[in-house]
Length: 225
Length: 198
Ligand SMILES: Nc1ncnc2c1ncn2[C@@H]1O[C@H](COP(=O)(O)OP(=O)(O)OP(=O)(O)O)[C@@H](O)[C@H]1O
Ligand SMILES: [Mg+2]
Image 1 (cartoon, each protein chain N blue to C red):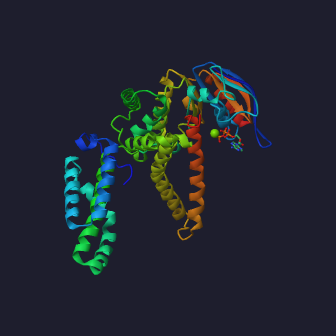
Image 2: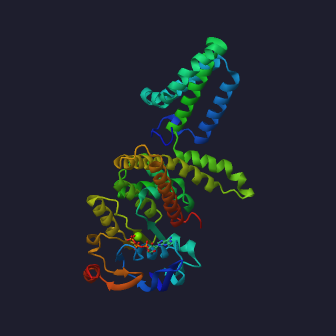
Image 3: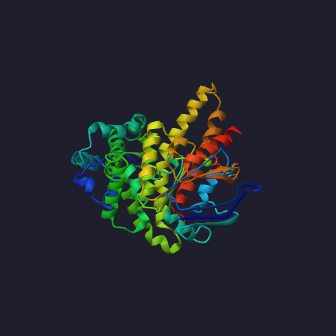
C-alpha cells in the first residue's frame, strides 16, 4: 500500500506537486498527465529519490523520509532510458549484479538470473554484450534486473517511450502479468485501458482519480480545453 | 578488448579468474625482465597452446592483435637499427605474446569474475575506509561506459552531418558533453534507485 499525505514539492520557488493526497491499494495504478505536470516527480517520491518539501509518503508503512533504504528495498524503479540503467557489460552480469548485495549463494543467484532471463525472452543472451541488444531488449533487461530482486512494488516512469509498438506491448503485457503492485507513468493511453486506478495530474495536482474508463476521457477533455 | 568474453567450458574458461590474472602478471613480468629470444619462444608456445585449449579461433585472436600492426611496423626498423634482429625478435615478440596472453584471459573470463577478484584483493583496504564493492562497481561502470560513449559519439556525429555542420568542432563537443552529463545524471539516479547508496 502506498500513502501520500499532503505532498507538496518545490524546486526553488516553483511548486511542482500541490497537496497530493492519495491512498493507492490497487494492484494496477497508472499516472497520466501533460508534459511537465509533475508525474515523474510524483513517481520519484515513491521510492525516496525525491523527498517532498512538505507532506509524507509511506510505502507498506515505511516513511520515505526516515526509512529511505527500507523503501528502496520494497520499491523497484524502471526509468525511460535503458542505457542509463544497465550497469554491467553483459546481460547475465547485469541481472546478477542486482543480487550482489542480497547475500544469497552463488548457485541460487545463477538460478534466479537464469529464471528471470527466460521469463523476459533473454535466455541465450546471458553472455551477450548489453550494448548490442536492441532498444526493446535493453528495456526488458532493465526490467529484468529490477525484478530479479523481487520488489513488492514496481514504479515505471515511461518505460515504453523509446520502444516500438511491438516492444511496448510486450513490456505492457509483462507489467500486466506481474503479481506485485505496479505504478506506471505513461503517455501511451492504450496501455492503461485495464488499469483500476488512474490519477490524472495537472500542474502538480490530482484533478481526476478513478479507473481508466473515466480517467482517460477526463484527461482527453482536459487536453482539449 | 573489453567485455569480449566468449562463453565456453574449457579448462581455461573454468580456471579461477584470480589464478589466470596471477599467471598473466607473473608471465608478462618474467618476459619483460628476461628479454631473450628463448623466453619469447617459450611464451609464444604457452599462449598459442592456451588459445588452442580454450578453442579460441585464430581469426578472433588476429582481431585482438590487428590494432597493433602499425605500431609493430614502426617498431621493427627502430629496433633493427638499435640492436639488430635479436632486438626485433625480443621486442616485437614480447609485445605480441603479452597482448595475446591478455586477450586469452579476457576472452575466457567474465568481467564479474575479475571484479570479484578485485573486490577480494581490496578487502584489506576496508579498514582505511575504502569500500571494495564500490571499487568493483566503479570499474564495471567504466567498462560499461565505453560502448555508451561510443554510441553517443556516433549519434552526435550523425546529427552534426544532418545539419551540415561537419566542420564545426562545437557542434560535436557541446552536444557530446551535454548528453554525457545527462547520461551520468540518469545513471546516478538509477543506481540510487537500486539502493547503492543505502
Ligand atoms: N531537478 C529539477 N530541478 C528543477 N526543476 C525540475 C526538476 N525536475 C523537474 N523539474 C520541473 O518540475 C516540473 C515537473 O516535472 P516532471 O518531470 O515531474 O514532469 P512530468 O509530468 O514527468 O513531465 P513529462 O511528461 O515531460 O515527463 C517541470 O516543470 C520540470 O521542469
Ligand atoms: Mg516525466
